Length: 164
Image (cartoon, rainbow, N blue to C red; front, top):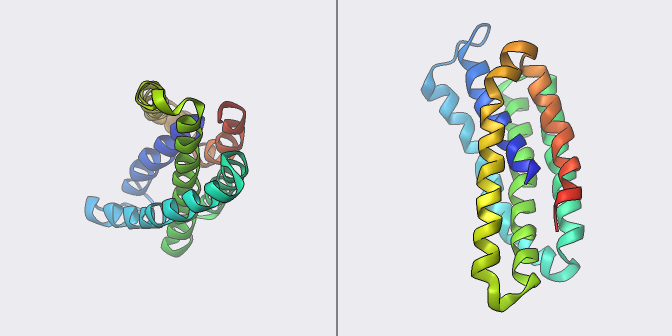
């Protein structure tokens, strides 16, 4: 779940950082960055297949490493649209691949009780996302974009201990 906190923290902070100088992008320009998230959608099917073959633990580890790599790329220069989109695409792919593998792990706990387990999982998942969103302004105002990106690098691998 910790990765979803990082996911929200990175995306909301990025939107705010890009709207301010020296970037001063308008809402439409910032919104176009969300197209990088399409890779996250495309990865889910592949992550599901890998999870079926290798189990959720292996896929979770690989995806969280990918998310950390994507956030590391974001540390280089969010003002460079190509690097920023590449970093976001890899970050999203890692996060949503992880989500796919985690859902398989939740189903496998007790398949007849999938609905109950799924509701608990999703409640915690969105609570973690809300925590990430609530940390945006304190982290961004006090430490700036670089610290946000560092959280994006550090939190996904740390999430491994709370997954599966």
